[in-house]
Each structure stands twice: as structure tokens, then as C-alpha cells.
Amino acid sequence: MLILKGDLIKKISSPLDVIEAVEEAMVLYEGDEFYMPPRMHAEHGDNVLLLMPSFVKSAFGTKLVTVFPENHSKKEAVIQGVMLWTDPVTGTPISMKDASVLTGLGTGAVS
Image (tube, rainbow, N blue to C red; front, top):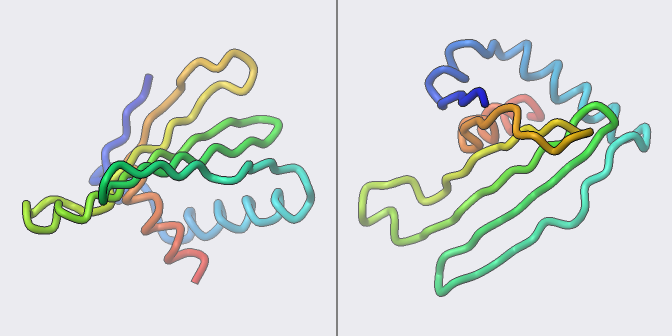
């Protein structure tokens, strides 16, 4: 399985690449070729786990994000997570990426 850390994602992703990927995702979504069930939200005390799967014919991805508010006082990121890319036929994990960086890049591209 390929693991892409945040620094590498930033290094190899141009703003234009991210904008094009977001545009392609929006076209898939609007064309009804995209399935994204409601995200799962699990709380444990003040901490939260978000599970966000999505599917297209050629891909299956799941974003797992944690929100730990007390991390701020520990000098750790409050929001952390991974994006797991899985083979849509076999379910075999293909890659894991830093979801915090992906979210930031995607939010910027949508703007």
C-alpha cells in the first residue's frame, strides 16, 4: 500500500491539479455517477470521529477524521485524519493519504 504523507502531497500537487480534480469530482457528483452516504459521526466525550465513504464506478474512498479539541493545549493538531483509497472490486487498500492536507487543498480549490 502506498502511503503519502502531507509534506509529499503538498510537494507533488499543484494548485491547478487540485482544482481540476475538484472540478472532475463535481461533474461526477452532478452527473449522478457518485454515491456518498451520510457521514458517520461518533462522539466519545469531547472527541469526535467522522467516517466519510464515497464511491464512483472506478474508485472507493473513505476519509476518516478525528476532532480532539484538547489537542490544542498539547500542541497537536485538533483535526487529523487519513484518506483510504480502496480497489472498488476487491476492497484491497491501494493508498493512504494525509486527509488534513487533502481537505485544505480541496477547500482552497473549491473557493
